Amino acid sequence: MNERNSAGKQLLLLLLGILMCCGGLYLFSTHVRVDTGFNFSGMYRSFGIFGSRGIPGGLVVIPLILGIVIWVIFPKSFAGKLVTILGALFIVFGVISSVELRWIPSTLYEMVLMLVLIFGGGALALRILFIPDLGKDKPSKKNKIDEINDKLN
Image (cartoon, rainbow, N blue to C red):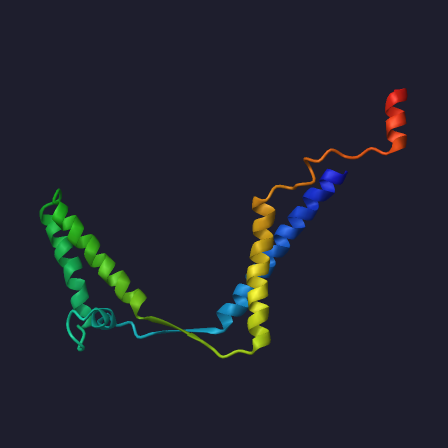
């Protein structure tokens, strides 16, 4: 009976940890504003390839188009596959680099609450998942009455 209660307690603590972490992440996500200009020139401007002007977003698609054309004309060509993959990566990096995350001002209480829920819940769930129950390996102590009963039987 004790082992069954222990498993139920561990499941309850795991669910509590997951709920705490999800609640904290929800509160955190409500305090972050996501902006995007969806332009590709910011990525190249920061690397200084085209100076401070940047390049128009449509020019990023040219390597992808060239790679697809080379790949269709020469299906076994490594260069076509490489240029296609690099063109797709340029587009993905351009989208990611255009995303801006901004923190909406919050009170100290809200910030502490978010951090306690996120990290406390995560630590609780991880403890249940990765640290074995230490009480199972210990032999149970017998009292004097149990020892006498064992001798008589």
